[in-house]
Image (cartoon, rainbow, N blue to C red; front, side):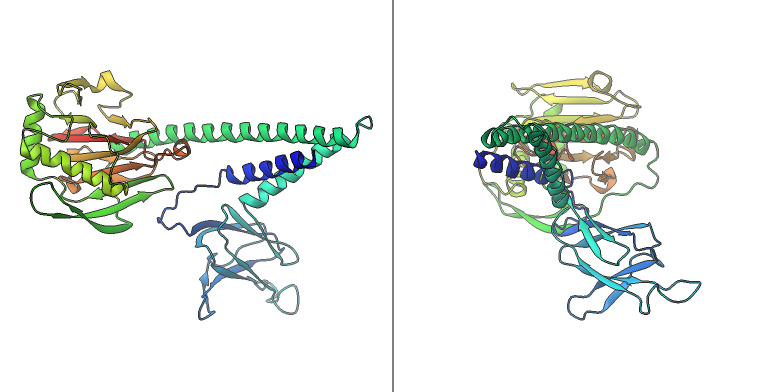
Length: 428
């Protein structure tokens, strides 16, 4: 019986720790060791804190811009294993500290999430993170269950253990539901904020710039026939389960012309093979690119879903899909989804087996047509990425619903010129 109770207690702590909302955090700089930390001053005096260089042991500059007053908080981005020195600052009135010597304390950033370092009145630093909070919640649940069992004197020791285990089961189920509700709320809020942001962004694009790369690399395309081709690639966004990459000069003018002609005559194939050599080369290139980007060499769907987008300021925006028989079916923006001034909102397929979406811009407008990923802040100016490929990667696993950063993007209305884009969804 005791084994059953210990099992539930361990499961409770594990669940609260694993599914804390601080886990699986997106790193803005793409570095898995980066951590956002908070320092709280509860020392009753003004403090400052400094990073300690690991080799020289010298202190870097202030992290508080003149000191942190009592009761204040300071949030910074740091890295796992970085150590800091906290210093008490002298009073401006007296020029002295509370004691003869100004006090010091130290703390080190761990791999845990949501770390809060609290400097108390004794100038001792304690830390709270997603694991300590999980242990505290488990302890509180256990104490509540123990109290309910102890009050019932009619139970034997064995029955008390069973009752305790049942109570812990109920507490775990309640915590799971609360976590699920919070995840759903945050997902809905993120979607609403993203949609509002994209609407305003499309109306004010004067200061919009293309997102810069966080990692540069080179990809080599080896066609079945012909010479190797090298392409420069840029990683623009990365979370635990998704990425956005840019491949420069992915498609040539001749390939774009062949693709445009194929779409116009309903002759764009869904399979990698094509009677038109340039179209076939393009589709072979897309297939290899996805293999490279997902670090896979096989098991990619050879029958991808292709979308074609035509956007002109004088006409309704059209969104066309390539049907199973190779024919093209088009819809106007008004027939598709929520729109604002002919803005196209693209919601990517959410099936569990979708690996990647590849967006290629063959023709870009003089004004308008900006692309915004509503949940990552990643942006593209069409003139910067003409001929490039944007690769949107999804990791195929059960955690995908917890990381929906790249499942939607927006194409702003075209105000001058024309936009011609193709996108493919590749499945496993």
